[in-house]
Amino acid sequence: MKKALPARDPAETTISMSGSENASAGTKMKDETPTGNAQQHAAVFTTEAVSFAVDGKTILHPLDISFNAGEISGLIGHNGSGKSTLIKLLARQIQPSGGRILFDGIAAGSYDIRAFARAVAYLPQDTSSAGGMTVKELVACGRYPWHGALGRFTDLDREKVETAMKLTHVDTLAARMVETLSGGERQRVWIAMLVAQDSRCLLLDEPTSALDIAHQMEVLGLVRELCRTKDLSAILVLHDINIAAHFCDHLHALKQGHLIAKGPSQSLLEEETLHTIYGANMGVTAHPVHGTPLAYVI
Image (cartoon, rainbow, N blue to C red; front, top):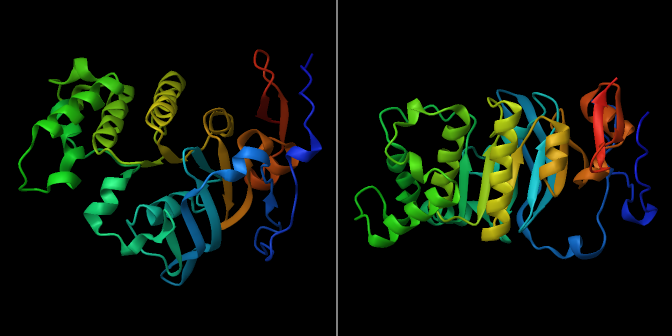
């Protein structure tokens, strides 16, 4: 017998229609706005009518999104919805076709490239370019924005590398070659590199896509621990809605390049909302231990 879901306070979630209809998806944005303290967070990243097109094809329609500082935000949606494109835009890996992106309230493009890298660390989907390096050497690459290619590696740099390896629990692997590590170990090493970078915001594009469930929980648990202990902000692209809701404070759902739902993570775990996001018949039940909403495909 299914465990009943806890009752939700109607004041906790409000629904409003966006100004423009998603004609291709046949839906309008579902805005599940938090109340109370959650609204008081300053935005670490803000997009203002940001769009992206390539070869005449629109990948992202104008988006207005605020990502709260000090929180873990998740980007969810089906394949090809524009999640990775958006996080690449935030990381300045590609340039928007229209609109603008603000970081800490200032146009992201106005930052010097090294100054931006000192504040924002980006981990792409493809992290296969570390052959021939030891764990410690790879983690040390995170210090590049602070001294450049020809700068001298200082005692402070060495301290940051050692601290990063300890925080991510890879210090015992320091002398290992990166290619000899398991998938979970390798991902922790890449995250250690971001920690050594000493940035305030982490951008992670599908950090668990090639990992089994145990290593997914381990890596995302590490990200959450780092965000809490170091007061970091993080924006993650994730596919599994249950994992996203478990580890993220807020979720932003994209579909065909449109923002169609947003809100506190568990507020998006409703059957109608999930069907709109994924186009699949889904149900929601209560977690047998925690009592939190848990989505499943019907």
